[in-house]
Image 1 (cartoon, rainbow, N blue to C red):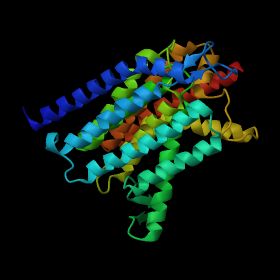
Image 2 (tube, rainbow, N blue to C red):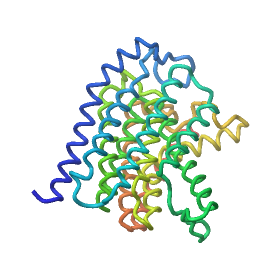
Image 3 (spheres, one colour):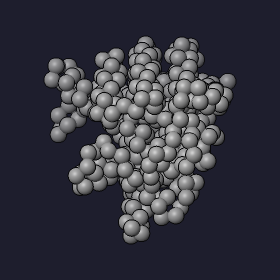
Length: 360
């Protein structure tokens, strides 16, 4: 068996193992939810469900992904003969796991105690800072033609700010779209697989395996979370998925390829990122705090115009898939083709928002 065949087999096994582990743990999470009182009771018109639903599914996603990440770290050098060598990717996987544990704890507390938005935001910054100081960071930032490489204190400060902002934004993109059954998990799975494939074709096998494990964990949750949901992932699951997407993509970007490592996830997560931007602008225009909740997110808008939860989620899966393909093409330096696909997906979003405003 060739090295390439071995790597492909490991990638497939990694996805299957993660998927199966999440599928086995989710029924346990449902029972745990009932025991600890982690139940989402619809109290306002933002909720898209009418009956109480367990919301501790993040436990299954977290345990599955974390177990696979630890296994990947343990066997990476033995089973991956190509690509990144040395201890750096392995140590960065450890840093990502540590950050994932911290952000999951924050999410669990939020699911049980309903943390204030500002408190949660500060905790996210702390988790991002921990990962940064453990070595997972954006090493080179091109800003107005100047390269900040981390060789001076000033460069390190710039790298710290941009890395933390990046991680916090991506963490919240998944959290904020977790409003329809199966939406956050499906988008996270699509994003993870897209980043995994882009990493694979460039020989970044540590990133590939970790992203595949994350995709499997998210996909294994979908049979229980797709409409009508038997369980929600809660903030613990949504923040964990977003945080891991942000940090894993930075595990081992090759020198000079930082733009790919950071822009590919942005392209893949175009739907939730635009949703966040629109939400901020919408709340500012109405004089409301940007952290306040409302029912104006894209998924709410689609449901409002009569598409229903299933069709809305499938539509957003499709748009995310197009953006994922655009990201993969971008990573291969086919910039015009990537821009074209991205504009097509963006056009769908604009049309849908226009239709919702017309209905109003």
